[in-house]
Amino acid sequence: MKIDNTFGINAEARLLITYDSEEALREALMRIHEQYEGLPILHIGCGSNLLFLNDYNGIVLKSNIKGIALKEETDDEVLVEAGAGEICDEFIAEAIHRGWYRMENLSLIPGQIGAAAVQNIGAYGVEVCDVIEEVKGISLKDGSEHIWRRDECKYGYRQSIFKEELWGKYAITRVTFRLSKHFEPKLQYGGLIKAIGEAGLSERSLTAGQLRQVIIDIRRAKLPDPKEQGNAGSFFKNPIVSKEKAGLLLKEYPEMPHYPAEKGVKLAAGWLIEQAGWKGRSLGPAAVHDHQALVLVNKGGATGHDIQRLCEAIKQDVNKRFGIELEPEVNFI
Image (cartoon, rainbow, N blue to C red; front, top):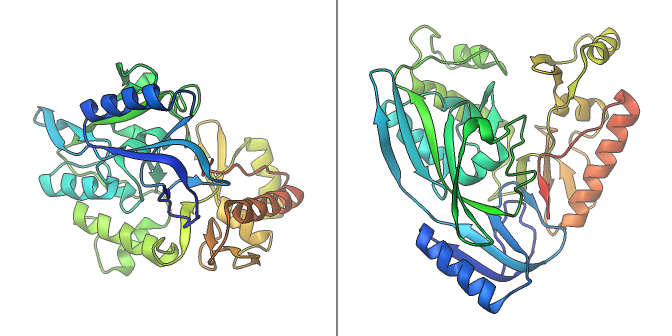
């Protein structure tokens, strides 16, 4: 069965199972263990952060668990639980509609809620782990449920326990968020204040809906629509280097974008790729997007290996010029 993925790569699995409840997932797992014992299991969301190098000789599970439930409410905050199959951007829009804030900067990032919790998605100075309270999941081995508090999820920059030691062991079923009832925009990152001004808006009177629209407009201007040109959004992580390394680079490249990070200085991978001469270039049917060098695209008919070859060529040239090893954000399957 063909596997949906935003890169538009032709990849098939032995079996694709979509489920809409915890009970349905457990029934599917029981069937898998009875009829397909020994085959690997891959859990996906919308396939928006995956690169398939080959067909998947195993079982693919996909969540369609829906629902948004208000669990607790105070004068200042709410705890809201969302099904892992909810589309993340639709959840953000609904949260704003209900007067729940703190996720506006994540608007238009593709994918489902469950995948967002696994990947620790982020944009414009906000990461989803900033608002996650707990994550629920079911063991792919025995169907038992487990709940992780945020501090147990081992969140880091585009990292989590679910991408590391628990990769392939659990299916995320529901995520609880701690959101604010008071809108306090976070505008310190990525030229947001400039974009707000260019949109004819005032920082002082800005609403959450307006901020969301500004971010949507920025992303649409920079990033290609996967329905029109296959891609997985940002392909590489923005590298974090030591203050000493950043200082040396800034002496040579004083215009280099850089931001403070918890363990050093964060650099803009897109800028590094552009400086290495890859923006807009192709390698066979795979290419670097001409507006955003952080995005690799399928021009049509590309295989996973075509994208991988482009990735490796970019990594080699960036490392040669800057002495920095870029790390893919996309998961290679």
